Length: 305
Image (cartoon, rainbow, N blue to C red; front, side, top):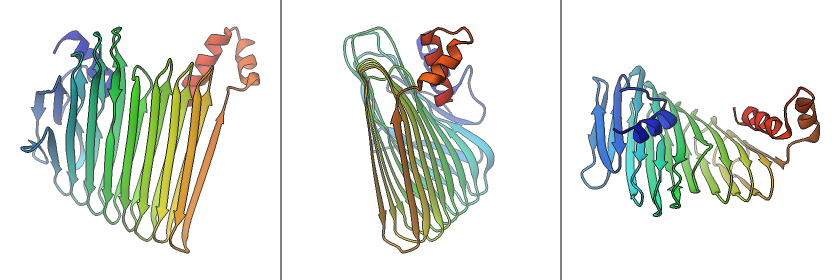
């Protein structure tokens, strides 16, 4: 891999070298490296672009890295990855996509990930998006995540996009079973004329199921953001959705919550806050010697940390 691709890998997956454990690295539409372990198998799909990742029941303290990098201007691809996590497993999955566009054509990656998490299994899933390059071509990412949690399963998803993506539509759909829990933490920053749309739909189908959706975002300059969340309680359950956004310059931010209770014991809550940086926060930091711009950067970095 060249220096540009290596930098993208570092940004989206924290990789400075070949990772330990199972991995599948995709570069410019082709597999650039793969490793499997005794407990984690990775198989190329035969009917479409993508892979199946099968994690054996009882697998503990292992990780899977599946980053994607694009450095060819004009390349557009859709990749389908399915994760099958066996009972009582406890694993970490590191995904992410980086696009470097130095040309005039649009580069686009659409990742469609499906998770089938079996009884009492636990998954930590990290997905980072990053864009670079001084070309006029757009960098577009449209990730779709579909989650199925069996009884007692747990999935924590951390998704981060803080630089370089011109347009993104992030769709997440989940079915949560009895005693299962889903935690989603989203962080987004847009600037220029970038746009970001988030769309969550979660069906709480099992008794004592739970979900927590937390989105933190910063919109600068002329960028646009939209956050939609739908939590549907079909049983005795607990659901919480929270959207906190800082708006700056001439940006636009919308938060559209929707809660539906189909069971008398469904407890659903949504919180949303959109506003500018408080003047007293700026003044406090400026009295310590920071310029206004430096103070804004400190506040934004702390908010998205």
